[in-house]
Amino acid sequence: MTRKRILWAVLLLLMAFRLYLTGNRDILALNAPHDEFWYVDTAFNHIWRGSYSEMKLIHLPTYAVWLMGVDLLGIPARLAIDLAWLVACGYLAYALRRLTQVTWTAVALFIFLTFHPYIIRIFDRALAETLLTVLSTAVLAAGMELWNRRQEGPSAARRCAMVVYGVGFGTAYHTRSEGAVLLVPLGLLALWSLVDRWNWWLQASRHSLLIPLLGLPLLATVLLGLGFSAANYAKWGIWASQELDAPGYKSAMTALNSIDTGPTPKQITVTQEMLGLGFQASPTLRELQPAMTGATGQQWVAIASPYVSVKGEIANGWFYWALRDVAARSGWHASAALAERKYAAVAAELQQAFADGRLKKRFVLSSFIDPDIKKWAPDLPASLRRILLLIIRPAAENLETPTENASPAQFSQYVAVTGRRGPALAATVGGWVVAPAGSQVGLDAEGGAILWQKLMAPRSDVPGAYGFLVSAQGLKVPTALHLQTSDGTDLSVMLSSLQAGRVTELTPTGSYAGLRVGVDRLEVTELRQRGERFLKRIGEWYVGWHYLLFATSVIGSAIWLVRRNQSAESMVFILLVAAILARVGLFAILDASSWSGSQPRYMLPIFPLAGVAGFLGLIGLSRLLARMLRR
Image (cartoon, rainbow, N blue to C red; front, side):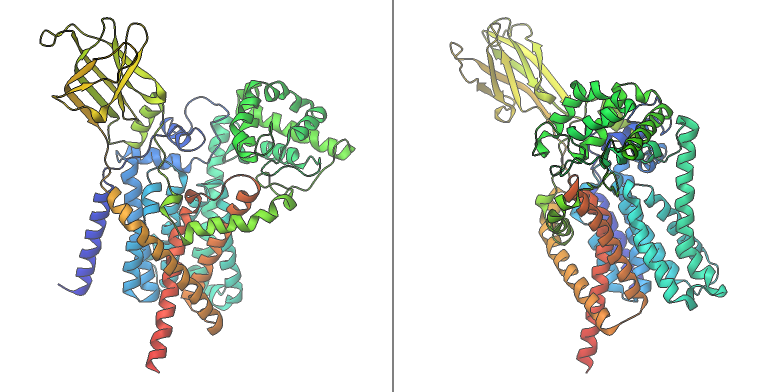
């Protein structure tokens, strides 16, 4: 067997082992109406079906389309994202091997990415970032392949790379709202083309470099955006890819943020004072005042209260949803077109108040960024540090798997859309209990509720005992068996202390002593993940890997700067650093000014980019050492 075949066999075995580790994992069923459950519910309603509400168009539908697509194919969503990830990683390793002509780094990169604990754990969630991570990897690989094959004629491999690069970039741009950060490396590549215009802009090279690497992604981005906007207009009467990007809504948010009342508290952009002035200046906005000052507004104040230093205010990250919620309660969201007209009217009336001098105006760059820069600028270095540490040191304590908390109705939608393979967790306990007549037994269920069951007929084999059989099923495993007597006294015993065929004394309470339970049947189903032990073991290793790759990235960049190397590898490295810094910078600003941007899920899409940058630096360092040794 040749060395090449041995390598392919090893890679296939690694892929099989990776699928084995995650083969029994499912998408977590979470009650997250603005995140995971929104995508599941949208896919469940086939994107544009169902009735309209203020929640219908709050995100781009790309990830929901993915969920719907894999559901139609009958592939469980957790397995589908793993398969797509393995293909993307294999393609990236292949492209890196062709770019650098170094096989060992390509294999090491493949192993590093496919077994990354962060990626495995976050892939358990129905988040758009998971698809964006796969797309970013595939686009990077296809872009490198287009460069590798720039001197080839038409070929299937080149055409495939063009499709993956163009369509993948456009899809990645429209997967999440911050897609504009992808334009940073693309813009840098455009500047590179101007510097190297003899190889990019001449008639002979336009079709090999300029059009595929710059024209195709821009065209795909525009066309996909137009497609989403046209579909929303045809169905809902609003020309926007998502409602938060609709002109009326954006202008209303910008106008509210522009009201100048002086310095505002941290993490709060629109204060109650600003809202009060807005109500006075805008008759349309005044329609929301009863709901905003009433129960709905107070509910959002309570939700945001743990994250603000001033009581009664709504933090910036929650104000978008609070405004839409009170608008819906006030009848604005009877249709998307009506809501857009209302928001546009608010913006026009506030702008008129600015022009008349009734309101002072401050400059606003974006409704997502607090315009009071002096307030949050001192916190920016700390935010940058926290976010960079997520990449440099991806410690296990930064990533906690959330507990499943979906309602029964939500859980059924998760099952229908994501093809959940693991059953709901359940427990069944049967036997007898010595207890007063009229007592009942139960198991603790979700939300602290207890599922009670009346005792059965007396047992002839145990004097004074009654039979019972109680079951519970849900996202939470019951932990205790409860007994409630006829006078309301509650007693309990932990399921972990019960054993089939044994008798257990109940903890005596008051006059109730000598009560005991005999267990004939005890069944507790608990889902066990095959890869958990493996993930815990390699978690510390990956911290070391990240330190190493970060160090080699820094050293590699220093080598290229000193030597002024203009190779393809240095160009790719610079583009990768630009893409990483663009995303890190954006979320650091959001973290310092508005809401918590230092979350692993937000940095997940740049993990593959950081990995490639680190291995490119490692290649540069190894080549430098080799030259030094030859001397």
